[in-house]
Length: 437
Image (cartoon, rainbow, N blue to C red; front, side, top):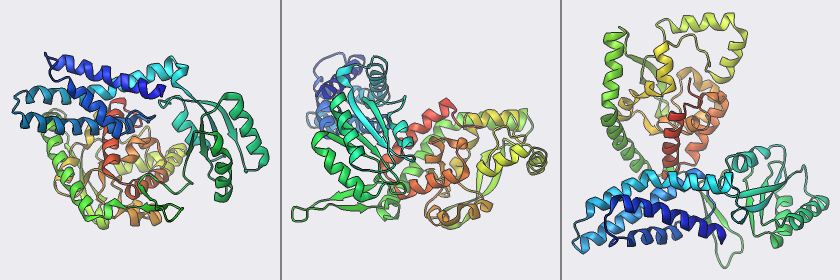
């Protein structure tokens, strides 16, 4: 309850600040309470990770905008312009406000009445999940008071967990077990559930619940999972294609001055060929020509071949990542364009031609198809993207195989919410320049 009140107050004061900046009257203060009310149904007051919360904030903001517009239209009010400014301001300000409030009160000050004691139970492969969700960037307010590494579930392990639950007044339990039999896992949950208010379980490796629906029936005591592949649904595919064209046009218009500046600088000042055109693999396995701003020297292939031959360590790096951190082929201007991701602006032409999406798997080279193995069947179902899950999850720092696995995960679990979160995180990655070289 303390956390619910905390989040409610954070949103109230953040919305109030936006209101004061935009409006000069309190006649429309009801819009704040409308936001807070809809937020209850969208569950924005529970413990959420950063990008899930950003998505819900924007969703609630949009719903409130629609309701407000209908109300203003019905009562023939003329303050629509102020309402529009209010929602635009909230679109950018509110996520930042909520993030920093959580960071200050949960991570810096670590206010005890907002934190919940938790025990993490994991095996060798499950430790990464615990660190990723509840490590230094923990914005959910979990205080991991004890980490218990197990290789099996037995009475001794359950007894140890029982003792720590009583000793630390634990209310949350986080389980990340990849190598434990399902029957033993359910046995452990059944034994601990009477003592714990919330149990969080990471799915077994290789199976994601990100895009899974749950069906229940009073007559059947077991639940039924519905695993969806949205990208095979004609309606969702049609909407995604429309959004790709729409966003492509908007981004192209907004970035056209920068696009022209880079083109003119390379063509007339540096006397270089502005574009680099390369064959890539697209939807249905078809080859298309991908456009980028040129970042490499003319004889790039020969330079790479000589460099790998003379540098065994670089050869190992290339075999693992299909990338080089210190690539001798890249020019000085090319390094800047890559670090800022500006070299990818011409790919908007590919989007408008229907060959690529704004968000999707990485566009692979034809000679990388064999390296993808069985995953190529997933890859060719969709259009490759300018940005994607691989880019916001480590980018060039990821080994080639992990990039492919991430792309397949994206295809299997695609949703509009996932695309939105990737888009938001892409902006952060571009400005942080993380993994770009």
